[in-house]
Image (cartoon, rainbow, N blue to C red; front, side, top):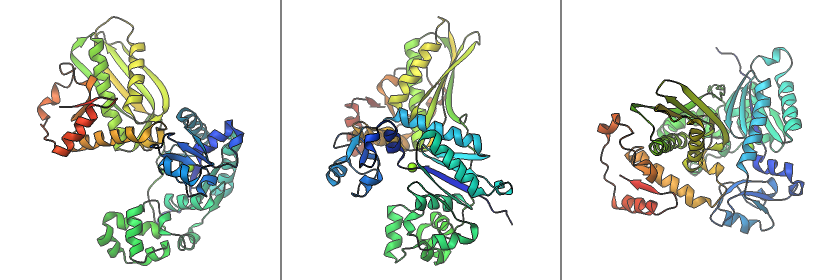
Length: 421
Ligand SMILES: [Mg+2]
């Protein structure tokens, strides 16, 4: 027997659009679309006014423009969004006992036990008011017994609202809602279930769990539990210090700056690939060097949320150049990404995006198949003697299919040059 939890989900309403409206009041009440400006770009975010025309995020910009020709289209400013995201996180961090930063505009809070002092909903209401007052941004929230129900409740509260679903009301609340409202259900699962005549969460919750198992495997069981209001996943405390990193100690100390740059490049490339693989974004880059006399120096920089090598590489290099001031032999160099949140790469792309997104997707696919060393930046491959003497034996020679060979050849000719080895 476990105690009933109180979990809050908070989600900023049309976050990017709301930030733009802070500095440009003319955008108020108008259909606004944020994303890549060219026809090949995609919609990152859009206002409720634009949604009424059928526009939604991830839609090709060309289609969005034709659905809503009067929309104001904005390129987007990841620096500003990252800044406002931090402002909101700081307010929550001050108030909440345990909070998880789930994405750039989303938080989960575990406030179990707060009701001993004053109701949990009152507490949530006051926090929400404070966020709106101090950031100027509209935010919606749901309070319930677990993350899934709270998130669905936020969805129902939007725009600009708050809902509490006490434990005893969870089933009645979920029952009439579309199965689409369950966060795990994507297009494919939705259509699969719909074709079986399952439309509402209530119906879904009543089918035998064994059937969900045979239909969708492990995911089916999780979905079934969610449909029945069961979700035991904890709110995991966010820590800016949580990080991924890579360090290299040289067998022979070095002053070869070009070689060190190359090594940094290759480290950043691998770590950024890891970020994308885990669907994470970083907001703090740290570079570390150790001189041959063991003097160790680090320098860090806050950046806009990203998982792109071509954004992170110049930052790592800049930090290294600022650090490496003494003409002394270096014994170790390292890179670390922290301030991690969940998020996918498209989020920080407002430029001519699809081509670059596709480039990253293609490269990452090859890496997943043949290992993270399979495709490397042109600048990263001259450093054989500096790099990885240890794991060379593990290198397997991969044989790409003709189709992949073609893809690789295409990649070689792009702006960001890649090589296959
Ligand atoms: Mg949001």
